[in-house]
Structure formats: C-alpha cells, structure tokens
Amino acid sequence: MLRIGITGGIGAGKSTIAKIFECLGYPVFYSDAVAKQLMHTDLSLRASLVEHFGEETFLNGKLNRPFLSEIIMNNEDEKAKISALVHPRVREKFEDFVSENSSNEFVFNEAAIIFETGSYKKFDVVILVTASKEVRIERVRNRDGATTEQVIDRMNNQWTDDQKIPLADYLIENMNDTPVLEQVEALLVELKLNQSTSS
Image (cartoon, rainbow, N blue to C red; front, side, top):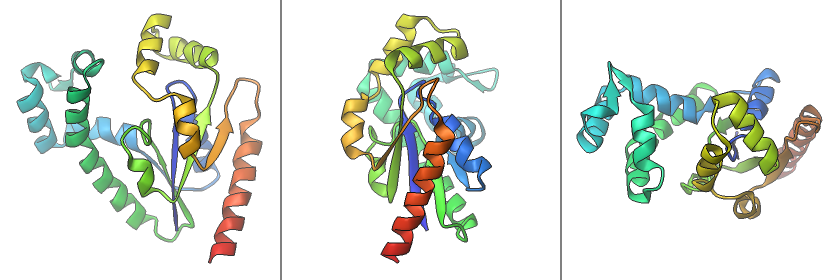
C-alpha cells in the first residue's frame, strides 16, 4: 500500500482533487477536517487548548476560530504550539484510517501544510495541487467572503509553490480552464505502473 499526500496552497483546490480520487473509489483521509473535529470532540485536546490559549478558545462550547486565527496569524511560536497539540492526534486517526483500509493499494491524505510541518517525509508519494495566485484569491474570496488583503495574508502564512515543487512527486494544475480528471487518471496510471514495477 502506498500512502499518498495531497496538498496545495489555500485556494488551489486540493479538496476538489481529493474528492475526485474518492469518487474513483479510493479512500481519502481529510486531515484538516479531522483536526477541526478533534478540537471540538477530544476532551483532552480541548483542555490543553484552553490551558494554553485561555477560556476564550471556546465560545458556547464551540471553537472560537477567529480568536485562535488572530493569535497564530503572525506568531510562529503559537502556531507551532497548536501543531504540537493537534497534529499527533490527527496522525493517530490517520494510522487508524490506514489500518481500516489496508486492503487498498493507495490511501490518500489531504492536508494543507504537509511540507511546512515536515510530515511529507512520512508519505510514499506527495501530490501538489497548484493554481495561479489570481485564481486562488478569487476562489477564496468567493468561498469565504474574505477581502483580497485577507487572502494574501493567509497565503503569506504558507509556503509558496516554488518552495513546495522541488519536494513534490507529482503536480496537478487546477486552473479554472484545465481538465483535472484527465490529470488524475493519468497520475493513477503512473502510480499503478510504478507500484507494479517496484513490487
């Protein structure tokens, strides 16, 4: 079984690509969604977050996302602290997911900051989804109702594609006018070919 990471900058459309793999019958683990769920449901994690960031971390029992975002936006130490609390639990969930899907030839893991956290080293293959800065800004503005400045701030907190590309095994270009299904199918053919020649 190959463990395959799917990543990309904000607005690149990595979730869209992940859903295509899922529709084609492959198991996909959505790290960011699981992280959000754990911050709501894991009582030990909730307690650790409150202990470090204060009672305002949760409002009416729900994660106070704007509060946390404000804290970690330009503070690498606080960002690292959240990662240290959340990522080990997400990794545990992914290992459970791998075990549950052990009969599959490929298991995919969609995550935003595979390269930034160094977790790309734990995957057999990493797929990087790319799109132009202009397209990404437009998508996030439409999706989140954010301003251009807010989107750029969020982009600046992630690595650039130029930093990620040398570490990626495959690229999928996800512009508004590029056919992504054909790219996904071609990539699967190559993955299967490589899998058969290496086994």
